Length: 282
Image (cartoon, rainbow, N blue to C red; front, side, top):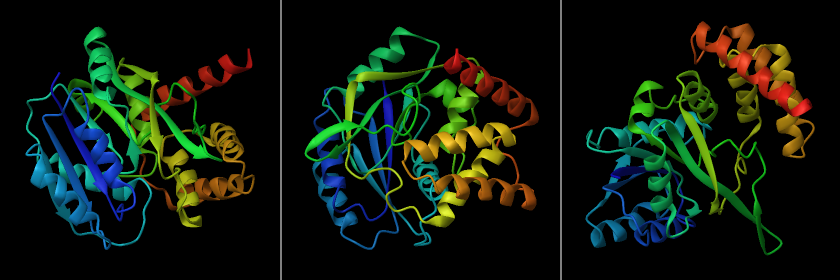
């Protein structure tokens, strides 16, 4: 299967070489790998240029943007910038972070999974982080949720969900819309990806408010937001995050933030969330 990979990168000099090394060693190479250098102030650009000079299928795009770290929004704006440089001749497209080490057969297995099931809209592996010299699963979400750091989208599914939303919560709304349109999602346990920079390691308090705001813009409603906030704060082992999430939710409600999904999609999302909650209680 033909695929494109887009890698947003902002000040990733300490990690991006590992990601690019794991890409050039893939048993199934992409049609094109586009690295969007998003206003980096370190040596990220020069590192990327080394690979561009050696591999004609790797392309560098330099993007100017604010230095402010905006979780979700900034990275997807960079991804969408890279999207402008691909044509329509592909089977699936990949959003990849610049701080990963992929197994050498990662995209060979992703391609097999998509070929075997025409209804499979999204696929990905499992993220692992290093703790005390051991690589353990980065347990922030349910195992059937594909982490935003490595998401592969079948072209038809990607088009139907309207691409990726440049807001925090984009990697939740994409999966919810996949379900809404009848597509399947698959996490492949055998594909163990080393995540070199743990998720949220540089998030500030404003970012934590944004997480609560994303619950509002997804039409969760207050009760589901309470449950989701409690679960996420618990998984991160930071109880006070719960307060920030709830404050963010009410902040978005007071400001009447625009929703990321339609009322019909919101109704489906609430029903889907309640079904998931009940299934775990039974």
